Image (cartoon, rainbow over all chains, first blue to last red):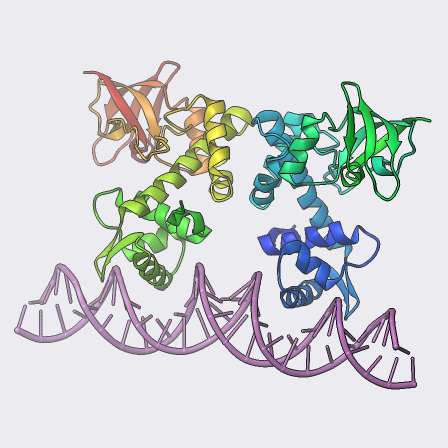
Length: 225
Length: 225
DNA sequence: TTGCTAAGTTAGGAAAGCCTAACTTTCGAA
DNA sequence: TTCGAAAGTTAGGCTTTCCTAACTTAGCAA
């Protein structure tokens, strides 16, 4: 049995993954969004979108944006599974830190076989999330999504556990790790200044005053009122 | 500092690696050999050879074949190091068998970073040879070559240790493993029939009669007369 | 020495992916 | 309601890497 995914190029895989991240199963993704995400000219995206629509991987309404077809979504989720398992493996077995795995995984995800990905999953004990807390799609394409709230949107006095961080920037990730703000960490919101002002939070180790942007990148599961 | 190797494509890396394997530092490699090795048309090779010569990676004498420049050799050895360390890692840490690692490594060698390769080398304890007994070039490009003789060229009565196997065919490799004919195994040549006839050999476990071609693929270090 | 064959090269072309420049559509503000 | 900016598309071009077909060279055999 031959599926579309046997013959996809690196570029195509990147387009589909980008569109999945941007449209998130709901709204369509715009040409310029995709171009920005992939650092390409919008004209290049128009051309590729046309090809991928003809191949049945995308639904395209002219001047209105694109959405993935079920086949396109399958490919995107497969890439996401690869990416996140590779990141997990590099951190768990090859001593990478969470701020350096992204670029490596970005290249490897196009080169590994399904077999290798599953062997890595075995070696890891089939984790549900990667080191950043991002959910790892299962081989059949289901995603274990957890209901989360940005720390920046919580009310002072409430406690939560950090579940996921919304950044890939190495500097930012290193800073978060320095403060102990990693998935699994327990935090209590102490104070939140208005107009996106500084936020005071308390971990099990220390109290920190952080910027709003930082707190917005921390997605948490609320623990108590 | 920027070196040529930062901007090489998959294709270029494959050409240089193929030329290294074919010309082996000594004689030039011919266009048709390279074409055959890479499964390409000779005309395609002519074109690429021209480009790589202009880039200073190859020395080309028209109608006479090509040889690597020092820079080209550096790249080829880097790819060989990657390939063999990846194979070693997959076997040692991810449960691959020696007959299935080649294709996986063939893709991964173009995608891994130098950093990842060195981490794999660390995890493996810096092996000198891969699972097939092929020497792993050091990062600076030196090769730990061992003097070997094909089992098929040895005289009956002599003993040897298998050091290296000269095949990548999965079927062939599985057969060798079934017979216990793997690097490190001890064998004694009992009989050798003329005209490339069958060869009788004895391992520590059993006696086998094998074809000449098989014995020619087993490169050994002689142990005693 | 000639002349044939095998090997190598050149010419011309296709597909993938990218670009810039020019044109078209959408949509909100006046 | 119109009209202009922003977004999207088309046209045309470039590079890489491959192909086939046609031509050239090398080298051996008669």
